[in-house]
Amino acid sequence: MKPIHVISAIIGGAIAGAAVGLLLAPEKGEDTRSRIVKLLKEKGICLKRNKMEELVDEIEESLD
Image (tube, rainbow, N blue to C red; front, side, top):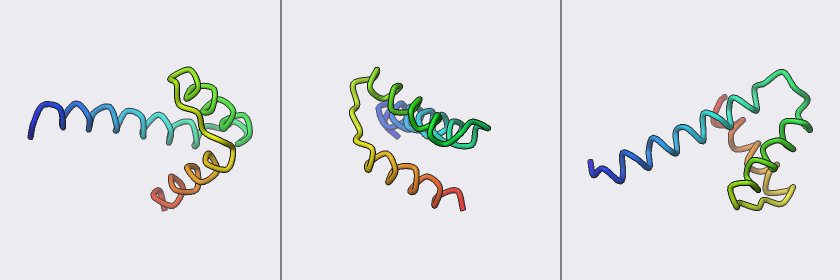
C-alpha cells in the first residue's frame, strides 16, 4: 500500500471510531448530535440536520 492510503485509512478509522463512540455514549441523542455538529463545524464541515440524521442512520445500520 502507498503511504497516503495508510494515512487515509488511519484518519478515516479515527473519525469513524470517534463518531461511533459519541453515538454510543450515555448522553441524550440530541446532545450527542449537537456535539457532533459543533465538532464538524470547527473542522470546517457543515452538515444540515437532515444530513446528520442520514449519517447517524448509516452508522447505526453498519453496527447491526
